[in-house]
Amino acid sequence: MTVTATVNGQPVAITVDVRRTLLDLLREDLGLTGTKKGCDHGQCGACTVFVDGRRVLSCLKLAVTTSGQAVTTVEGLGTPDVLHPLQEAFMRYDAFQCGYCTSGQLMSALAVVADESLTTRDQIREAMSGNLCRCGAYQGIVEAIIEVKARSHAAGSEDATPDAIV
Amino acid sequence: MRSFEFLQAHSVEEALALLALPSTKALAGGTTLVDLMKLGVEAPARLVDIQALPLTEIAVTGETLRIGALASNSAVAADPSVRRLCPALCDALLSGASGQIRNAATMGGNLLQRTRCPFFRSHDWPCNKREPGSGCPAHEGADAHHAVLGTSDACLAVHPSDLAVALLALDAEIGIRAGHAARQVSLAAFYRLPGETPHLETIIGAGELITHIDVPITPLAATSRYLKLRGRASYEFASASVATALHCENGRVVELAVALGGLGTVPWRDRQAETLLIGGPLSEAVINRFCDALLAPARASAANAYKLALARGAIRRMLESASC
Image (cartoon, rainbow over all chains, first blue to last red; front, top):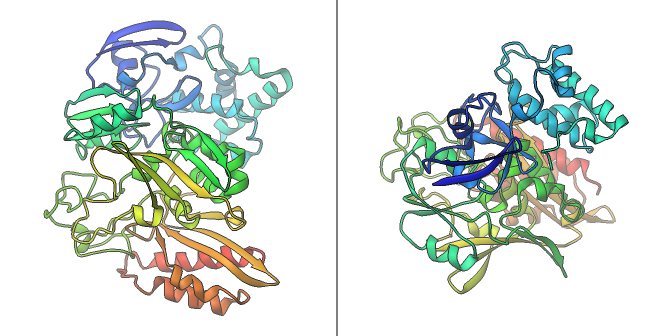
């Protein structure tokens, strides 16, 4: 079947096996290996991407259900030359060691920064609970989110959310 | 994953016609189904994508809150009417899964999710629910996560849904379409005990579709709350959970509801036992008598008997902290 979607703002049209997950389409068919396969069963969050403005697990989404939708991956967040504020904050707050969970953490953090109902450390931790980190970098992740939240609250939400996010 | 024919339904009628075909399942958020298809536990020959159907509305009509079967867990949990009219529903949804899963998962899918029992989820083990008659390893050594209520010689698997427990306490009804007919079934009647047929989990048949959930709007529903106890602070299924609603006047219980999760093969409630609490003030003694009656049918092993103590503690905490 052919999937026609938008990925990081670019139109794509790909023919895939009906069993293909969005995760495998991104990594294998599009070469966007920033999104990681941690457990492939929806239990770790490493495969988190945005679809139509909401964070979802790409390992549990069949690629054929993505037609007509807009997908944003970590590659759409920022570039080495122009880092997203979250990426820059993750570096400063030591929010990763091996880096394997980091793409998923960043995409979830993006949703948490944008969610104005989340204001306390406990609420942020709860909202991030679907992203596991075996290196234990959780504290740095939370501190990075708190800082970017404070800045985006002060300056307006355009600072923290890329254009592709609805 | 076994290959399948993939079809998309554009109307409820079209979906019903396709779902009546053999070996055909509905695909909504996919957070249970795709997982189980990867494990080979589910292997439908045909998938019908129902995500385009107009079943996402959340609306109040008269004395009923109607929630579309395709409304996402996130959307329902965030809805101000749901929070105001039946807060246990929001708390139950927010206690489940993760933010990412809740965005994709639907109401209908949540009700139809399948057990986390490791024997069910792996072809390395026999399982009467997955392959009727093949056996049940849990009976040789039920672990800490197997059920203590509603069990049978064939199956000890716990029902994993938090939503279903809250809906049971709220006296919700499930709206089901089949062909040209529509019917409503109470949540209490929706799930089947395993008995000798653990592979049959609900009263839904082939060619049928959950279209909505109806929650009665009552003063009792507005008092509802949900408590979920588990080994981790988040992102884990319940070891024991309880949905409670309590309406008192002049220090005496007028009506209440107590539903249990994490303990039963289905969401659990005992209205007969609830009558023990009605008419008088809440005291430790009467709550204990209620718990004794509620848990009397329990069959526990050394590994999962802790669930009984957890359930008692959860019920006491919820009833004692409610105002009466």
